[in-house]
Image (tube, rainbow, N blue to C red):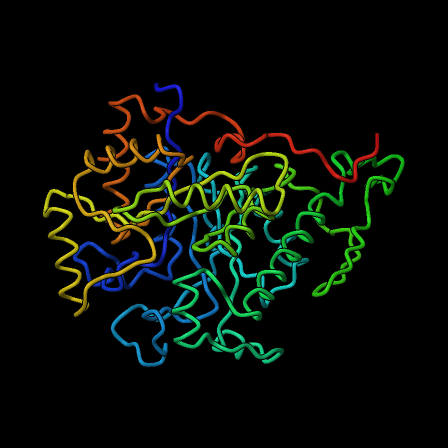
Length: 404
């Protein structure tokens, strides 16, 4: 085994990241909302010894970028809840991390804290959380409690060119920073050992080991403590997807892992530098922010090459596939070469997005992983321990409220 074996997870999104994936021959469109479909996908990822699966979610109906969702009929126009998928999968898996996406914008941090802590219990220390900001008018209309406006074309162009966002976008991420802070405080609001469970003395809890979090901020006022004991990991793994300096700063303030999107042409170097600069600007201390590169993959199968599979899906969709992340179409050996090269340029791990979930996840497990193992670049078995330890994070996280 190489001295620094690769960390690899996968991001699951319905039938796959290509909008026509549900029409691929081996996809299972009639089962997308069935428990068995998701347990099968995660079982395949676990067979491949992958670090984690993240599960995509949104408060908006999936649609083409910047297109009205009610005009889309040729792609999967529905979702089921990512956290509940993870909860269903947890008891039938053993080693692989489970990272559902949960929004901060329309969700109370107390509820998020309790949900992710519960997942950490049911998975025996394998829970994570992908933080998402939900900033569209369509998403806000589901709740009717606040009004949000969509970015104009000029604002989108400006953000793409310079990374500068309007004030209301900064407000959404400021709110998300506070939400993550509240969640983390609530996870710590019970000290380890707060549960006495002394039947004879009629004492279940040592009340001195429960703490008010007393958070007062612009967006939330939360007293605490949580009603759920501290999670097995202490602090489940917090992740965020980021594309711009503002969001790199958000990740540096809040997350353990940031998912980034280098291009195949430029490679990861420029983004690694930007993330490091963002961490310096916010004066991040403690563990360094781990950087994982997202790549959409269309791998060779016995039936067709990766490029041919991608071309066929594009034909079905009627347009060329585009993504915020790099798009790789080719052999498992060529992808292994790419991962090895990027890992030497400051990338701590990878999150692969299967273009067509059933086929590409199987190719990741059965083709890519053996190719990496033959190079000594990937594990041949799971170690015991939590998701934090699997990712190389500190397995024991001090409780901020613990008394000496």
